[in-house]
Image (cartoon, rainbow, N blue to C red; front, top):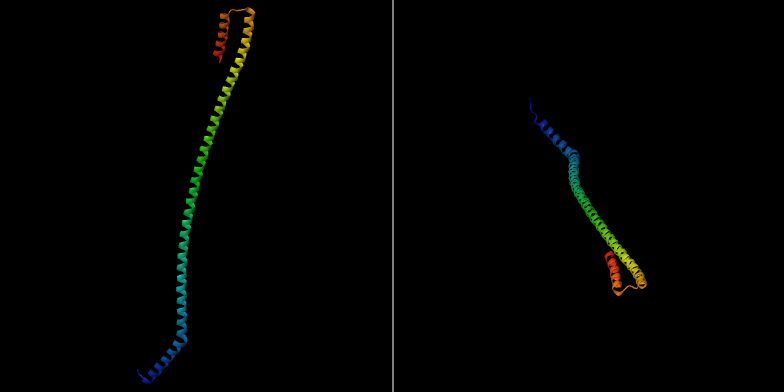
Length: 161
């Protein structure tokens, strides 16, 4: 095989010219496009990471809001139980007060009826006293017999009250 130096130099110069032309018109735009694509991919990855972080943050906020809502619901239930218990106690206390009032009213009515009965009895006693007096006058009973009759009627009236 024969080695020709002139061909080698011409091919080397042609290769260098082709390489420079490719570098200037093909490789630079191609590398520029590839660099833009790399930047775009990096930006998309950063955006995806930011979105993931925001989503995780939102999930945590939602978990906290849900936990807060559960706590508030529990507090409302406890407050309702407490209010219901207080209302039940108030109703029972009011019923006891009403029962006590009715009992006192019944006792007052009994006392009033007793007083009326005593007054009626006294009226009867006074009527009987008048009747006794008229009988005494009719019979002309002595003073000792009259005193015994009055005491007897007063004892009867005293025993009835």
